[in-house]
Length: 150
Image (cartoon, rainbow, N blue to C red; front, side, top):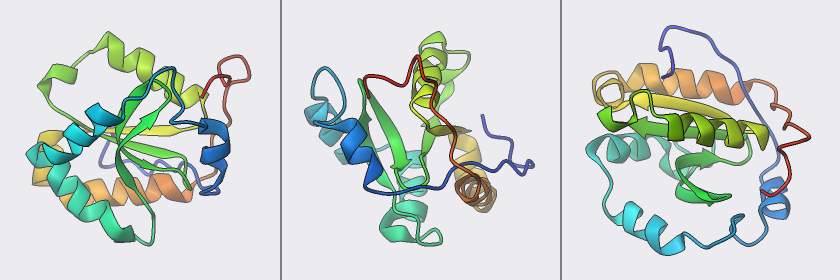
């Protein structure tokens, strides 16, 4: 989970760069039907976060929601800043699957921020500050051995 008191600083980049790297949705299979379903049925925290991020409301950063990256669907992604934001409920506590997923996404050059749902709902300004700080920093470098296959 992101520490709401820290001043972490992540990526910034080029919007079009992801399309060349991602190709046809980026994965071995299309997750578009599932992503569309998830967009229609957001959790309360996802809806709150989307209201903060949509339409470049957060300092002009363009986020997409429930977007496929590789064989994963991420809650929110800003390709220009190489930043992924996840809203997590209790089922994500100490999830091995999430750790593997986050490692793969980081190897592709993304910064991954995770927030507990109660942080999003109870401290949206703090969450927004952490996201902004993350978007201002330098782009992370993808791992050469894992960087293939996005």
